[in-house]
Image (cartoon, rainbow, N blue to C red):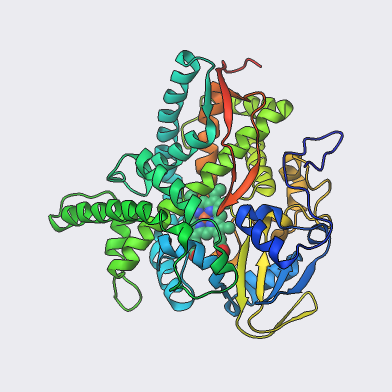
Length: 464
Ligand code: HEM
């Protein structure tokens, strides 16, 4: 299972296959765990073109070609249908699942919420939510026998609470745990590729494994409708309303003075709950796991956090902690794979790409590529410190995507993770429960298949 190194931690990752999977094995593996489809050449070659019965696919690992797809010739590469089929049932016509003019219009309307000043101001409520989570963990550390908790679940709850404190000022109109449950159910049903989608059968044929997922979608839809109703009531009566995502979406106008449609409004609220929750929650879970497996790095992070314990909540100048976050996003990028379809013929890395080719850029593979990283499967945050950080090619490291469609929540997420780690690692130490199985699995994001059971203990600042 592991590509282990004698000196540094090589955390769990599926062993790449010797040669590419055949069509049937590929279908089965994509459905079980898309992280297991890769073969050795994928981590070795800059570019591969493969023809299947249904389409032509290119896997791109050359940073120059990545730049061409996302930046220089981005208009030629639209999000492709297969990727959209996973997300559209929930995210509808929102910003993540739109292309072309519809996407551009929404991006311009939502961007004012993510300016550097707005993101800086979010640090305080993010830290407050982390504090609330610390109180819950404190209860476990003091009172629960065995002091164990599923950190994956706890981080899921925390990142939802952070959204409540920042983007959704009046809360989620339901218990965060109920929403968390609905999202988990959605990912287990809709979040798995369906055989019918994989072989390109039309949408009107029912996907049986998804029938049960509809209930969670309906639940989320009702909650979001209620959130919009409450906010409209406030705005109509000129009552002071939180200056958050919902107010922005309700009041924003495009360049022609048009508001978002009712559908766009609804779908963008669901989009931000989905996109802003699973990604950060899984990243935080993997960070706590990797630190538990690397005591030396954990001590360095604790020392840095302790040294700045007196700083205000918005303090983010923590280079070692930041390097640990970046290295975790390299090894376990929450969005492990992005696909686009070429609208017109193009050339990537000297290879002709014909119109209709599906071009995949997989951060999971790119970030572990032998030609771009030394000891690529090893956990080594040193890569992201000082001069070493500057040597990393811009388009060899893309956990947040690149170009115009780069993650709109990137700075929000980085601040959020710093705030959470500062708060939690200043007070607690997390250790893996012996024997707990940790298996990375893709359900839209990379998550630990069996959760992340950890033992939590209190620590005092300055004490190793
Ligand atoms: C560690 C945390 C996160 C990671 C690794 C991440 C990663 C990504 C990636 C890779 C994309 C581009 C997808 C593509 O081009 O196909 C993306 C887009 C997006 N992300 Fe994030 N994200 C994170 C957190 C967040 C947060 C906290 C929010 C909201 C507050 C958010 C909102 C979005 C939205 C709305 C888009 C679509 C942007 C567009 O298409 O214009 N993300 N994210």
